[in-house]
Length: 397
Image (cartoon, rainbow, N blue to C red; front, side, top):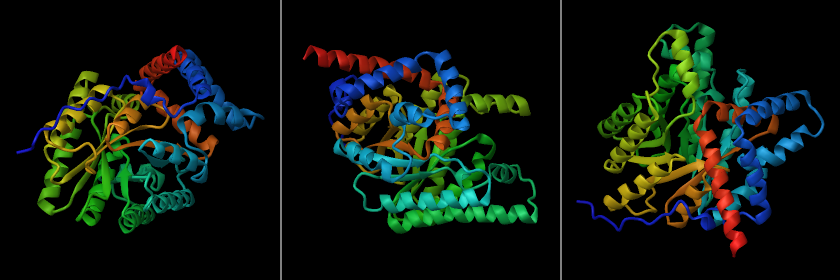
């Protein structure tokens, strides 16, 4: 029987801890940025304007973007530029997950370039005290059309089979390097019409490299009504076949695109019918995870305060120490510092996803994420209020 621990007292409203790393000037800059992000028409118009300005090479556009929204949400344009961010987060016991956010152009050359960059992130993470994970998207090293065709069970031409075999090899190269360097690696989740192919690749890698500990971690998007069942099935498979399952639990990032595609193609929308249903499924996944840690390790990739608090309580109820290496929390860099810094301060394993890459290449990724993830709009208001509260607290000192 687990020995319950004292319920944790983590306050996500403690802005002094949340913004301890920020100077007054940095807080004012963040205040202005999130105030602008609360204006939805401005975000829509400004996002399109920024894209055009960057595409047209308008003088000063890249600088303007780099030192505003890019600086807030990205670590830099290169791994080297990310080093100060890695060190700063590390000072507060927060790990960095370097996320190379440049998407493949669909050519074999671009996929090979992405592979080389991903291997660099793994090599940097090896033995680094502040980089607990690496991460990659399968579509960064494989053609999504091929992944979709494989999932649909359609026969591949000889040329397509060669390209798919090469894509599988790239995934294998990443996971083998992670295994050799003892670095945990996330396989990000993507769109449902080729997610099954990604899941099968992830399971293949877990079978191969997770015999002693969870090196390869798959991602489960709990806004899909079938993902808790899939998570539980993978756990059972791990028990049967003798491998560990690493699981990053997220709500999801493609809700509007999933609904639109389901309507266009005439199949059932895989997304839960309500936010409440998604929240329930996510929390049920947490409950399952903490009672099956014999073969599981999880990362709660969430900005949701209620789910984060629930996980701390579940761990206490099960007698699991806050610093247990099987349990991690993660948020995006530049957001939810009230979660990250307070969790880390209380001794929980916490990390930030830190996107990086050339401004021109990364901005479309970030802007599309903002468009597709409707939670970000509400999160912007929350960030704004927390920043405002901390500025007022400092003025009263």
